[in-house]
Image 1 (spheres, helix red, strand yellow):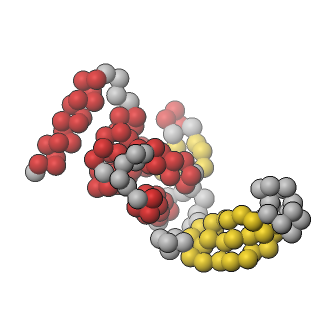
Image 2 (image 1 turned 120 degrees about the vertical axis):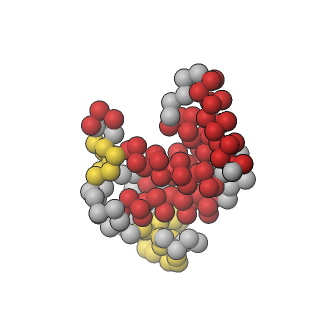
Length: 153
């Protein structure tokens, strides 16, 4: 593993343990050259996944991008990081176990919407406003109204 501080090629693993959600291994490493310590995470990847975007563009599935978009939706909300991590892991597991090597980006968006709906209603609306590309306040108002109706059923 390359050192993020000095770019030396070799580091020693000083400690390994499972992450809190059990989906990865957390490793503390020390650079053999500069002595700096850093943390890496190792996750299981079942297959190479490709996301089919609008206009038929294709790009590799990126867990970090998924995590970042969910974290932005949950910013300043009382949602613990562990719950966000579990949601990201759950979506990644669903995508990987689907049996397909390609997944349409809208399907991932739907999975995020479903997960956020159960996690936090404000984060759900925030994500939806970007995902559904609200262009007017009326779009936002109609969507927020439908969320309120769902909560009262």
